[in-house]
Length: 351
Image (cartoon, rainbow, N blue to C red; front, side):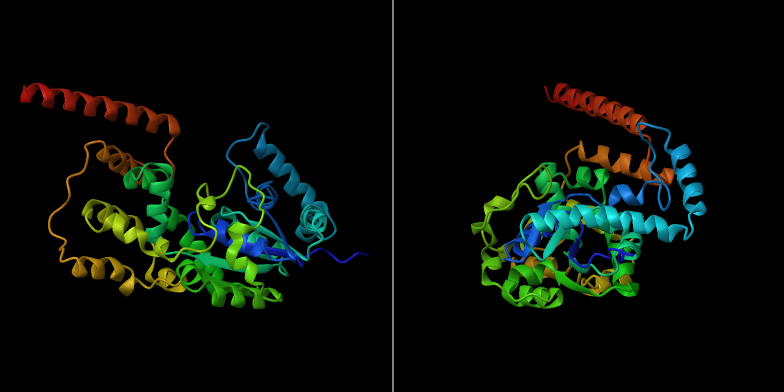
């Protein structure tokens, strides 16, 4: 009987979005023994077929299919282990053929949604994979999401998804209790001293360090739909990106307040585990304000539209679960109407 595939030729990068994972993927993919492809989402469908997790909606009756599959798996001689072996065969074919197509030793899968949804499943499925955990300052994540996707609107970015609150707790649990070896990389260390950091990563992978990985932008890479849309701006790691969030907040106490509120639900233990202890979490911002002779007094006036996202976020939190999209859409439309009416009355009063 052929031994089950356990991920021996696989590198899994576990990271929140906007944490430098595309850059790290390309640095790894520049190595002569590593093949990669942007965010393939190979594992999420396996986890949500119904044996371990279920999805909310599908083009078929997922509840019926999940229940039937669980009954079938119970019928198998080894139960869930037989199901996991079938999943491993799927992984072996896809990862193995992707790796072999380039004649490489490893394939890198960097899919951020693995880290907030299915880490326990992945560890059980692929215990022999090489795990790389990438973390970044949580406020920098919020700022990057806001600046990249919603024009610098921090409230809207946090309403759409509070990335640190979604990713930090499961990643911290993995780091504290995982049964599989992993190497932890902080984004700030990667851009400040890329050679030392990558030497440590390649040592974990059992590969010789290759200097070309530091100039990842000079190599050819597969570019598809997913991944950092700004990755082509730089050919090497850039250190000034690590503290850019400070510039975004230094004169914007409203943004700082939004970020502080977004991080309240994250335990100090989890923050310390991922490398950003609470006592020093805001040190860079406080130091920058002191150097610039600024003090955090008062609150910068927010555009009226910013309150829309705060109200909607509070409503969603109050429901204790994701609010129905139709309800939120209607509320947003009503608020937009009120905002437009208030602005018109303000203009009329001034004239």
